[in-house]
Length: 600
Image 1: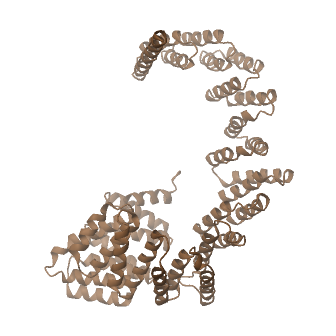
Image 2 (image 1 turned 90 degrees about the vertical axis):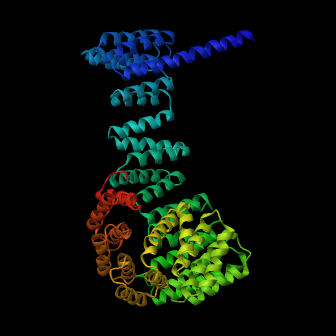
Image 3 (image 1 turned 180 degrees about the horizontal axis):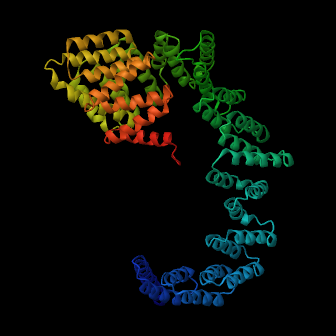
């Protein structure tokens, strides 16, 4: 036992000393003291000739000193000591080329190809060394010979396909990779991830699509090829064909709806509502036993709503059809307790597109009264119900619901949302001290949106409370913001004009313009909105609304008016002029995308 402990101690001591020496050698090399570095690497190499890292580093030192003969001798000695390690001949050939000995260098490459052993490790190490040294064509020859020597050669597929791709031999790469995929289904993820990293334009995906179709003719029942077809269409954002292939795959493999549901949701998020509906319909046809049934039903109806909107409205006939589908599904499945989110969405549809706020409140209130549902889901319902009650003017009922959610979820995001909305309600009512205290507490909220809004309102209250001893102008302004929230836009515009007349040259002038801009956007009077925004960051560029106005106008040009050049100019101006703005990062990112920068 004492001997074992002693041997372990010696080994640990040697490794520790070697590690320290290696770090020192690296430092010498980085500092340009190549002779000192070479002395250390030589010592390490003498003690452990099996570690080619030391040999490579020692060779680099002699190369930096332009002592090519010494570098060549180091590698030559290693080759003689380890004749079976063909990869050592690659750096030796590179040295010979640097020494202006191309014939001798070529002899090394010829020797490698002639004496390649049936050893997969040596073949891979040698091909990788060749590729690293810039001899990708010889590396390909090595791997191709390896595949002949060790059929089926699947161990070389990834390296060889990458080399084909690197050298512009895309057809060979695709043929090789697809053959491997047919032979080994587990190769699928490695293949697709490699393609994503390597392909940069749609024509390359078209070539892959053509190659896969050719393979499908040979192997029509192969599920990996069908899945690959869907994946290619997805990369091309051809969601319709991607969905068609996934349905075909599901028919062959049976009852695996996760891919179809995921693609349908992607199509929904990308605004491809017809494709989304076809996917959700496919899942619904399978019945309630599948785990995606209720979510498919929900997003199918959301797709119907989003796909029917024309200029913020839904035509009457489509509105009636959607209303009927919501009503029937909720009636059929409400007792299961799984249709709660459909009720939530139905209420939004009634309020937003059917001008039926009363019914929206009634169906949400019925859910709250019935109870018996998951607490976080019930909390979401309560917040939405409180929002609608506030629109109806039922301030205390709304505040009670917000408070309940806040109390039940004090540490969670949903509780923070309820707390923010309750504080905003108090702000609307002129209780600025209490509201600001809540906003200050929410500055560190988990949700970035809640945090930003809380900071914005807190700063606004702080900047304006001392301007009017009775807070009359600010109270009037806050009450007008409530009118805007309640969508009483003409009344809000009229009262904003009255505020300007009653309190001329007030500190709230820029805020009035900001509120009017929001109203004009809602009314789709975009020219007037743009005028208000521009006046804010031109005439009130030091006020807190200036960066908000610039960012919102940029977004208006970007997302609504489709004037990308004006949007780009405003984004650039914002992150240059308002470097501390909470919008500066997003503005910079969007500017780079609009400018066409790569890898955003």
